[in-house]
Image (cartoon, rainbow, N blue to C red):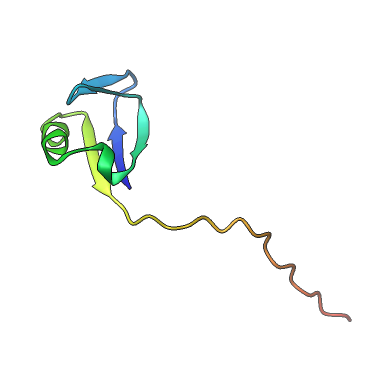
Length: 68
Protein backbone atom coordinates (compact mmCIF):
# COMPACT_ATOMS: atom_id res chain seq x y z
CA UNK A 1 0.00 0.00 0.00
CA UNK A 2 1.15 3.52 -0.74
CA UNK A 3 0.05 6.44 1.43
CA UNK A 4 0.25 9.93 -0.08
CA UNK A 5 -0.08 12.72 2.48
CA UNK A 6 -1.31 16.14 1.41
CA UNK A 7 -0.07 18.64 4.00
CA UNK A 8 -2.23 21.52 2.77
CA UNK A 9 -5.80 22.34 3.79
CA UNK A 10 -6.96 22.20 0.15
CA UNK A 11 -6.99 19.42 -2.46
CA UNK A 12 -3.80 19.24 -4.53
CA UNK A 13 -3.45 17.96 -8.10
CA UNK A 14 -0.27 16.16 -9.15
CA UNK A 15 0.45 13.32 -11.60
CA UNK A 16 -3.03 13.83 -13.12
CA UNK A 17 -4.60 12.92 -9.78
CA UNK A 18 -6.30 14.95 -7.06
CA UNK A 19 -5.19 14.38 -3.46
CA UNK A 20 -7.48 15.40 -0.62
CA UNK A 21 -5.99 16.95 2.53
CA UNK A 22 -4.52 14.33 4.86
CA UNK A 23 -3.79 10.71 3.99
CA UNK A 24 -4.75 9.22 0.64
CA UNK A 25 -4.31 5.42 0.40
CA UNK A 26 -3.62 3.45 -2.78
CA UNK A 27 -2.82 -0.11 -3.78
CA UNK A 28 0.72 -0.48 -5.13
CA UNK A 29 -0.50 -1.05 -8.70
CA UNK A 30 -2.52 2.19 -8.73
CA UNK A 31 0.55 4.46 -8.80
CA UNK A 32 3.30 3.94 -11.38
CA UNK A 33 6.92 4.89 -10.76
CA UNK A 34 6.39 7.90 -13.04
CA UNK A 35 3.46 9.15 -10.95
CA UNK A 36 5.41 8.59 -7.73
CA UNK A 37 8.28 10.64 -9.18
CA UNK A 38 5.92 13.52 -9.95
CA UNK A 39 4.38 13.31 -6.47
CA UNK A 40 7.89 13.33 -4.93
CA UNK A 41 8.64 16.69 -6.56
CA UNK A 42 5.49 18.39 -5.27
CA UNK A 43 6.26 20.51 -2.17
CA UNK A 44 2.93 19.72 -0.42
CA UNK A 45 2.86 15.96 -1.04
CA UNK A 46 4.80 13.17 0.65
CA UNK A 47 4.46 9.44 -0.05
CA UNK A 48 5.48 6.30 1.77
CA UNK A 49 5.14 2.62 0.90
CA UNK A 50 3.90 0.43 3.75
CA UNK A 51 3.43 -3.31 3.99
CA UNK A 52 -0.12 -4.52 3.50
CA UNK A 53 -1.32 -6.32 6.60
CA UNK A 54 -4.57 -8.20 6.99
CA UNK A 55 -7.02 -6.63 9.38
CA UNK A 56 -7.84 -8.81 12.37
CA UNK A 57 -11.53 -8.25 12.97
CA UNK A 58 -11.92 -10.78 15.76
CA UNK A 59 -13.05 -9.31 19.09
CA UNK A 60 -10.31 -8.90 21.66
CA UNK A 61 -10.17 -11.53 24.37
CA UNK A 62 -11.56 -10.43 27.69
CA UNK A 63 -9.04 -10.40 30.49
CA UNK A 64 -9.89 -12.53 33.47
CA UNK A 65 -10.36 -10.55 36.66
CA UNK A 66 -8.63 -11.85 39.75
CA UNK A 67 -10.97 -12.67 42.59
CA UNK A 68 -10.13 -11.08 45.94
